[in-house]
Length: 576
Image (tube, rainbow, N blue to C red):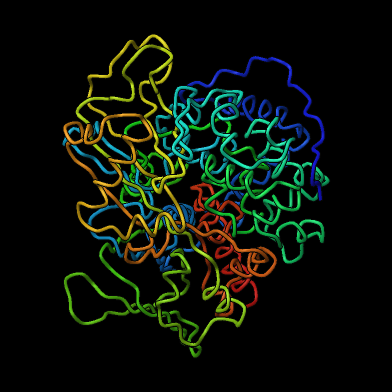
């Protein structure tokens, strides 16, 4: 579309952002969201973002507390989707059984790994940040009074290492322009444009062209979408950048400097839109002492006979919840004569398969795992197509326990307190802990710390993940040394322990998260939310929500599925 020129960039006025503080109130979060949307030139999107991310209506508007005592619900999967579904259904008195294949931990893809008994030295192998706009996530964070602090997304002292050139990640991108741009065959206008502005122009322009009523469809689940949105979401991210006139050299550069773009070039542009529209990566938070405390807190509430989180509820009205850890569901059957749903499962202690009958079922496991279950009779044609075709992403993470925080050594212009470094090496990105962020902490580089030494996706995740045994750790250490300009084998005396995961290889997950391919929003976004077996089986999980890869999608879809189920029961009772 644009071969040689790009519209002139309007310099932004200097301003002061609202305070990014720990445990923000709703009003404080809203100020951060408004500021971010103002900077993006879309302040009019605020109300739509808040409304679309807010929790569904409370389930007690559908039924009364305790109204559905004696109705049995089976939930497949004990991650955040299953936990939130159970938490809501319990209000109406449903008797709930949760089947989770994991036997040694709670939380599904929420996975905090602790290196010490005091649980002070840890890294996240699953979710590690929470956008301020994710209203359903914050609904539960506030309800369970979980402690949060700012997650530092950007640090100007971190590194960019591309084509064997190392520079600091300065705010205006001058270091990259001076040292890395000359190594690429960029067009004249690209040479004079900071790399962040190239991304903003290439991926942000189509978003700004859309009318606000069309933009909000990005976060909506509906049978039909605007032709304008379908046009853009029918293209891959690479095709969008090409359409906007970026050269292949610029596209390669952008992909190296922004993993969430470059490693998803062949996924739908929709996935970039669902990140950019609500400005997900501006102000973020983390859960103090580990993200696993989120699902653990919900689990403990479900196991309590008199949980404090159900304010105003009589314990007698609450449903009973059974947790079956180490129970892998292998088959879903529908007995049409009595309209029951039968779940066959394998218990960790028994060789023979077991089965239980339920009035209703909520399936929260990824479609990549559901594909391996026997379904009889088959779900609808479109649902089975979605189960076969919906795309899931490989992701690899490796964390290192270090006996000192070498990344925090040096003066104020050298210490890296949070944020990430980016590279075109297979490790893709390095993330530094945010717990020493802020001023007034002094130099604490001699403390032990946990470094996320490699976080990558798709092909790099598979290829690095295929390195077995010590070889993966050795290769990652050598690449970190290159990015930081450290002597070879410097980290051998620094790294004391490690943990690695490649989510594509983890049994019963088969991928890190759902990320649509071009056209899949049109084909599957609504289909995956539709109940099956005449309103007896419902679906939840980030793959069934508009917020793929985020806890928001898991929690919001869990609440939605619980409401769908309650409405189905209400209608069925009214028909008799």
